[in-house]
Length: 456
Image (cartoon, rainbow, N blue to C red):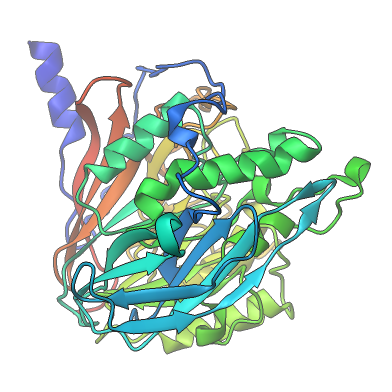
């Protein structure tokens, strides 16, 4: 009983008004391993192909503009091009409007993709449920989505955060628990299908299976995409040397609406949050397009309208796990000063297959020749959260550095996802969950209040 009470005290605490008295961090010794880290067999029902000739599959939506009044709807028809038309309206079965998009396909080694459709649906009203229909005849399929509320400083909204998902039984547990969370949009921090762990035609086949795997969420809730290292797919032994080829064909982003030159980095506003997506594996040093774009995008943040400033990236820039230790150091050296100067509230990353949360700290006082060269408490700095534990076939990263660095508040090797529930312009609840496969319960790894970096 005493042990349980101690765990509950550790699991529930409050950070408010930048309370930055850095206490000793905690490393959970409970490593959760539910299933072998193996992909679900392709004949499993979770990968079922929809009935009907050339029926649309792998349906997913994402935000299509800067402010949330446009949606990009994407799907694949496997046998022939079919129609790139979306019918939609506010009443189920009654579709007042239509939108047409474009179709593409690609090859990867000797794999030929299906016909990939992307349709921009614009002119939508805020905070409205829309029903939509794709496909024709008996093969048509119907779904729905909810547009976000109008942008404003005190607009509440709940985001889910998932990273490094893959398509194992642990991945399925993560997906199903996210769908029970009440979150409205996923912030995905990279490494989608793990198809690059296969070879030759199986790479494309596993992209297709992953699209069907996540469809029960992605067809209804927008997923805000960022790319990880497993999306690079640099495979010269197969004569495949174009980075991110499969990812860019399948998963569009609204980069043009924020004047980004690449779909790999972009920004959106949703409810009371300004969300910036960065690419850990695209050039980011001075004079590069991503560097120049971020410099301008940070200037556009209006904390009177969107007080919450969130950054997504794949590679964490603070990480005390032996896995991928220091890999994010180059991006930290380039961008950390900007994150502090602009008071970024929280930075979500993946890559490391474990969970970790930092205190508000920075390491921006060192310039090679002088200054402190270690992290120190900084009330203007973000909280760094690694959520790279979605469930992929590479397994958990259970070896943390010992002793735990002073900047690290909590860490645990567990499969799971997180949610960020914004309450108003000053407070949000962050909830990290670890899932026990096959049982409907959740362990609260972290449940606390964070205050926005906006000076109020």
